Length: 91
Image 1 (tube, rainbow, N blue to C red):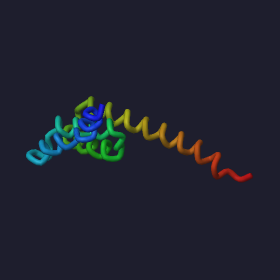
Image 2: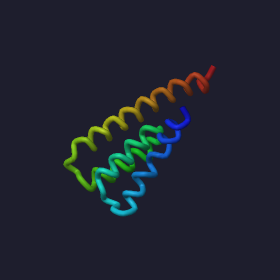
Image 3: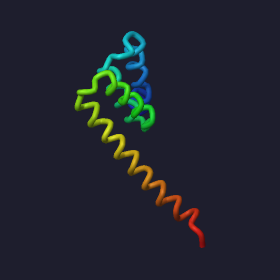
């Protein structure tokens, strides 16, 4: 049980090592972005995938992952908005 949590939260470290050798390694950037998304670090995931898209603009997989992150961000904003609306609405 704990091994799975440990490996999931430390996944980005493996990809960071690859990027320390080659900062424009698209495969490592994509995997790092996916690893960040998996541990709910959406800001880091989006930034990393954006960097990958700059390196390889024609890559459809990168664009698709960025779209998924955009949708998740919008859904999160809507959920937060509805939650806080009830808390702070005027009575």
